[in-house]
Amino acid sequence: MTRLLDQLLARDTEVHESAATRATCGVAYEQRGNLLINLGFAQAGWEDLHQAEMLAGTRMSYSLAAKLGEARRVYARDVLLNGPENVGIVYEAIRDSVKYFNYAEAAIKSEASRPDSPDLSPVLAWVYAHRAAAHTLAYWIESASGKPESKHFSYASDDFDEARKRCLKGDSADWIDRFQAFLYALRADKTRGDLQKAAWLLEKIKDATADSQVRSSIERSLAMLFSYEEGEENARASVDLALSVIGKDAEDYLASYFAAASVSWLAKYAEDRHRYQDHLEAAIQSARVRSSKVLSQAYATLASLSVLEAMSDSPQKGKAKREAKRILQKFHNGDPYPDLETWAILTHDCAWRELEKEVARDLRKSRGRELAGVELEQEARNELERKGGSEDIDRGLLEIYVDFRSLLGRLARNSRRACEGRSQEREVEAKTQ
Image (cartoon, rainbow, N blue to C red):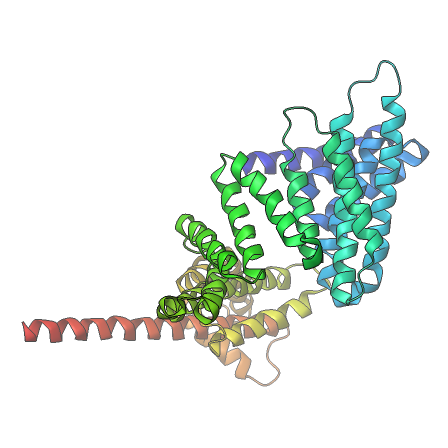
């Protein structure tokens, strides 16, 4: 991770140092943008690559066009689709993605026609597969609307076929197979055997890979597919695959759910259903525990992110404060109840440490002395109770801090009661022996 961070910082330096030269500045933006996309920073990556496009003008390379196509696709999927206010422009972003890929395809074919050109088949395969992914995203949105257009399915299928043709001998086509399996699973047309086709593609990858992480990922996807199909054989296969994943990762909540769903089907419809009925309650309970833990930890990270944004110069800091308070209130209400991992995040995470420092600095200016621990918490409460309060103190952060300390206090009291209950059990055991 440090090496990736060093790479990013080096790209920052290149962008700043090349600002005076148009050509080198464009390359610097392209390289940093591509790295940002690979790191999952979709919006920042798209902005850098778009800047590189502006600097390139009419001399855009196929490499930059392909990166722009992928950046626009990822931006549409990960940024625009996460906000209902953006729904109207998602489709436009996908069309932009396809246009960039079309440009890259034409430029690659033109380059490949030159006698001295290297073999560009792998590059063209990448463009076809990722353009297919853009068409798949369009088909996905249409499917969710209830009006999928067959043309996007056909465009995606054709591109997957073209990508597969151009994979060099010995090169793995796993990533193409995974994309196409998802496309079949989206359509899920039983009359065309879509789920079976998706399963066949995934089975190919599972049988060929020696990577345990890839294998678990494929097994999870297969467990999902088999749980979608009715029938005792499919349900049993789903349970077996899901349990295989859980055996390697005990916290895998998705696999646990697919196991429970398929056990439920077997308990209701299998010939020997009584054998599965004995295990149904345990399967549902274990899946619920795993999903609740994940939900608890996800809320903890979302609250921490909101705290970080609330302490930044972001124009969204007011919204971030409200979001942090909302999540803390959910924890107070036991919806969900914080698990031990969540307790660790809230207790040790840097976001909450920095919040405490911020509150301590504000109150020190107001009180004229250093505050810490219980005294800091009490003074924060006193400040909130004062009418008007000090103008130098951010009351929004103060409210979050007080809510946060209240939650930690409540968790501590519950933990003490649990420990005391265990001690009482031991005393009873000792007296009865």
